[in-house]
Length: 223
Image (cartoon, one colour):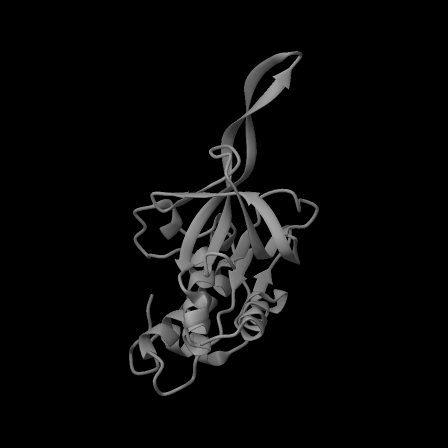
């Protein structure tokens, strides 16, 4: 079982700015909030925001947000619900949407560009889990938040962040070098990292990425 201190340290480790590759013009900042109260409601697998619910909930949050836009939805966020014993991973998708505003005593709507909250996944009963299990699950959710949950997306959360597609944002998930680790999982993580470098025109620092990607390592490269 993971105690509060060990779990908090794990989240700090997996959300540190060193794990995110960020390239201009995108600039991000990180903050840790012990008590973040936000509009929040889970409905059919979606995390509703202030435009869709009046319910509020308090979380301990780790947020990566666009610099100068701390009040907006975070690009990536880990929200620990101490009361519910759950951890939620969310992301903010930049969308064209509509919002209400006061127009000289009248309520009108206008089109705006803003980040819309999207629930990537939830880890339930976190304090009943082992720390290694939590590390694997949380790092997978953080990577899915950036690259998407599927190569053939059918829903929005399965699609990559637009910033990943343009080569401006990537998450460096920790590689598990243990024998018990899935070879396919480790290879997929390396392929995703290489893809981010190729998208922005930069060469990868680890030569293993290129070798595996083009199939020289036993012909197992994924293109």
